Length: 483
Image (tube, rainbow, N blue to C red; front, top):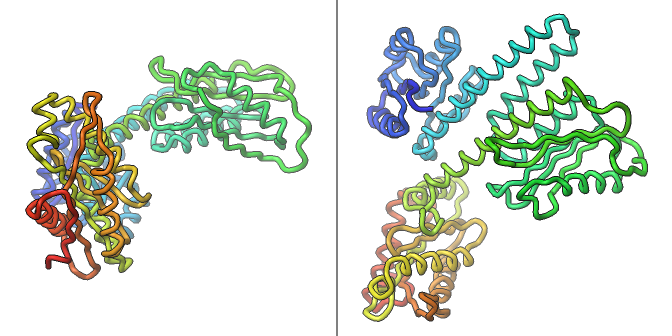
């Protein structure tokens, strides 16, 4: 939500300036404070929905400022910035009421505006929920304790959904809410959407023992739904709250469902069922519709956050990691290497440029769209050569870089050679014609205890790649063999 005021508190001007620039690009109105004492003055003069606070500052530190905000400005949510070694203190600040904490050394600061946006969305949804709760309370003042318990539960579930970032977790929370807030034998949620979820997932909570026949009956009901994206059987997580032998169940005689959707986009459904008794009506259907609407909002927020994260970390053409995120991953792996005592390798891959082949020749002959298509083919082939723990990025132009943790020199050279051969031994296709391609590859290995930066390791791999080109291109060079 643009136009909202943000207070950024950090004694380091470079951190304040970086965060301010990123947040202003998203339309937020920024106030900077260099100390906790200065922040107190700003808070007394103006309301700030969100404050980003450094944990360690001279004078009033982040913890003291957080206590002041919780006591005097409870409507202000706080994001704590913490150094790498301050996680225990950061956990303490969360217990004092901070909404979120970010590690300066490992966090992508470009995601800060996204986290702020989610906090503001949560506040807006919370205000809407509070208004809903007030309306319900006013209309049903004379109802019994059951109604009040219901209102409290809806509020709790709404907040849980607003903070969810995992699709499976949202399905689980919703199914638990259905089974607890509505008098039913089963409560289930199906999520079927082209976003994030590779396979439709479902969570079902049952108050009855469920045998194979009962599970099959529920799955048949879910599969018979009219969800647009449901083209495969969902992966269902069944949870039975009752022990004992399951009866020979048949189709559920009483079922009620609502679409799990947002802005006319169908994302799945919420389902409740009874094995007998009266149909669902009145208050129960209201709860079903409320949970369906809130679940739809939570899923859309999850998908948007995932997309924004990809925009911040992925190359828009190839879908590989981008230059900046690769350095973040490498920095994190170097820290892990120091802790575990394991080596890691960086492999630089530069497509060779020759008069009759290579990316420049293709761009000149067929146009840049053909060159882009070639780069995407190279990216796909590099993905196929990765271990599960490896990462690959487009470093820039026709350069790619691969990060391989927990690997020694011999293994790194074997991996680099395999990548080199996969590029040169099978032709690529441009405008329907076979196009041979070669690459110069440089590989460097980092050792624990060297105290090197990500830039140092990439530089060594890049120098080895340069040596491969100087030696005639289309070959692999190892940095340690030239040192």
